[in-house]
Amino acid sequence: MSLQEKRIGILGGTFDPVHYGHISIAESFLDADILDELWILLTPDPPHKTEQAQADYQLRLKMLQEAFKGFDNVKVSDIEKQLPQPSYTIQTLEFLKSRYSGYTFYLCIGGDSLHNFKKWKDWEKILQICDLFVAQRPSTDTQAIDESIREHAHFADHEPIRVSSTMIRQAVAKGDDISELLPSSVKKIIDKEELYRVINHE
Image 1: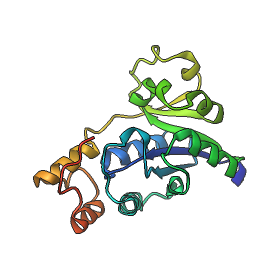
Image 2: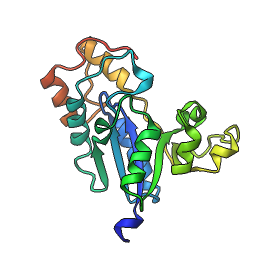
Image 3: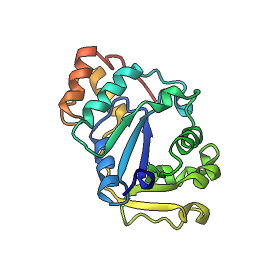
Image 4: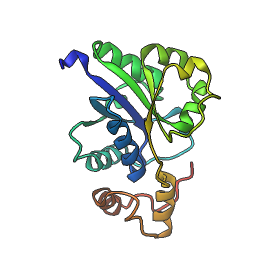
């Protein structure tokens, strides 16, 4: 396969912090045998989380890099840091498509995001650039999804892990053990930098 024929999945988020749930969904996308690579894009300034103070961008990036260090076909990217803020998905995809015109992109999202996709900025333009790659249980009913969206959706079998970044931040603030929720290399950074000692509410 030439470089111009790569199939790239785009998985974005604030990853504050990255945890086993993120790693699990990434593995589900890769196991579906559609993608050649999964690019994980760290969002510096998401428009829907304007009230939430976040951990330093470079620390979140470092935690991401540690979490996915063992994955040959995963690329952790800070490309959204180079783009105007706030970080809208359509802006990122337009930039990627202009830079990598020969690549086929898939926007990787969870099942909840699929059901709310019409609330995304310029969602119709997004579907002109790429299809959606949705991680969810096979039994999930997609008939309620608008056909204009469903015809652009591919699915990866995924069983979500019950963990969230909010849960981890709250646990750290209370002094609870988070060892089972994220890689030890990520926990070491949280401990060293004394992150999340005060609860961040989403």
